[in-house]
Length: 338
Image 1 (cartoon, rainbow, N blue to C red):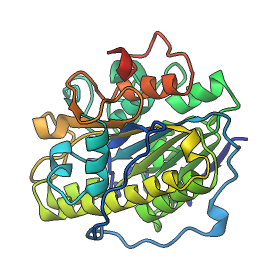
Image 2 (cartoon, helix red, strand yellow):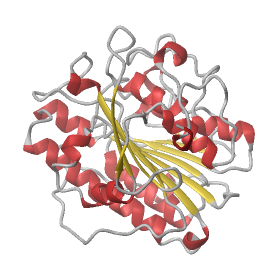
Image 3 (cartoon, one colour):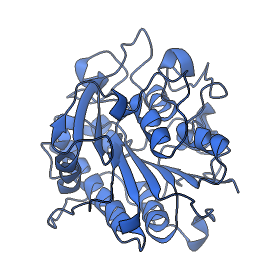
Image 4 (cartoon, rainbow, N blue to C red):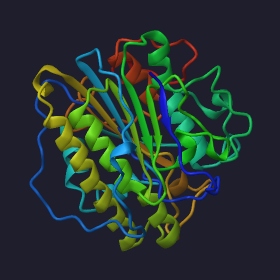
């Protein structure tokens, strides 16, 4: 069953809402994921949101594996700012796993925009292969280089796959996008009036009450704060704190599963690009090119920092965890093979 929930028509193709791009790459093994002490996080600025309706949860096929993968993308987030912010859940993932700061390609390859960044995370290839060099998506070649969820479906249709995104071109054809292909069981582009709150509600529902094998979730609000206030602002740190609370809810949903003790969870957090101190991205500065992977579970040693893991490795790492052969054409490599 392959279901897509599209946004209402008439939305501007590339209106940036708030990309939170820290693709969470953490593998939760049978070792219990430890929750940090409760802390009150500031609310994420910039957007009110309405709750999704009961009809907003398309049916998801039941998963078939004990190995579970969760990748969380935090648009426009920066690792050094996460480490400065009130972010107990993200910091707990770092302590229990691996932090891996890295840099994107320069602008001769692609702009430091969300289209190329998320295409790289999801396909496991660099822009010279997937073809996305800016947010126009002109030149995209997702037929040759599909996203990792599509590859899972092609290899084993019994796998249950899910993608939920606040930025519509990831999971819908809006803006010439649709990075995540139509073979994926459920794809949701969260309606704009629900924003990251709606994305979080859906993720919590599916992770806690249903049985996906592999899930990708993208949150937007950190990027919004970067555009409006800059990465050196308190507003940017507050946005990280708000998103951290949403991630905490997702992790609580995972831990609440009746089958959690019998499952092996891989969790990865990542970003598509960084932000200039004064705000904005697309250029070639170190701040704009800054990305990272936070990973826990198999392949990620607790409390370690690595300089050889990049966002392009996320797809290959997820494929291996779900028992799917990693194609020779990918640029990324499973983290435990590097």
